Amino acid sequence: MRLFALAAVAAVTLSSLGAGAARAASDEQNLVDQARITLDHLRSDKEFGTAKELLRHARAVLIVPNLVKGGFFFGGEGGDGVMLARTAGGGWTDPAFYTLASASFGLQIGVQTAEVVMIVESEKALHALEQDEFKFGAQAGFAIVTLGSDAQAASSTALNSADLVVWSSASGAYVGLTLEGSIVKPRENYNDEYYGRPIAARAILNMNEGHNPGAGPLRHDLP
Image 1: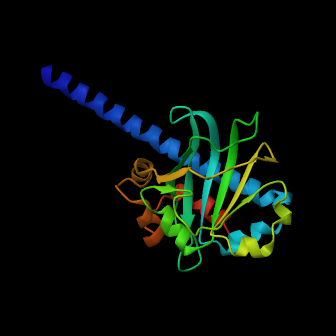
Image 2 (image 1 turned 30 degrees about the horizontal axis):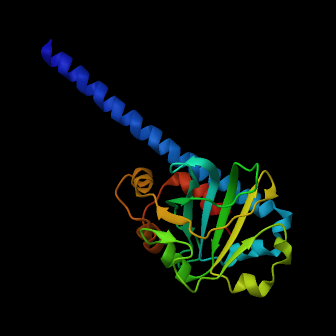
């Protein structure tokens, strides 16, 4: 009876651990699926104009489906996202998970959540975002174009020479977004859970390591 009881306890413990892992994996897959929806919003946004063509030549893309105002990092603002990089063959890597946080992004009054897409145009910008922590404004020599309500008026010269092009919207309307002082960090625990082993963001983005079939639809939606 005692052996039976111990076996039962062990079974319950393993079951609980398995359920916890399943919940974590579900959170990560949900983020990937939300990123796909945000990407579709950007691609169907008529006001985004010709800037959407930048995706066809982008070095990488960072998608944050829900940028939350307040209640994040002790009253700051932020959200989780995924970044995919273009491979040598012209396709896309599986996603690396990231967190974007700031004391204030300067969202418009009344806006509580927003979608954000950062189109990474240069190798320099990709390497910077792959670091353990990247703070906007702390590194000199980065050209960042933030698209607002005048997205179609953005000059092709400015767009083509940018290291990062940032699109953001809330319920279909553009929102003011100031990245100065905000921080981008890999969310390594999400990467580890999603791929079933410890894996760094730079290994996913630079060496195309880490594969999960759940990321297939998002990868295939990118041009």
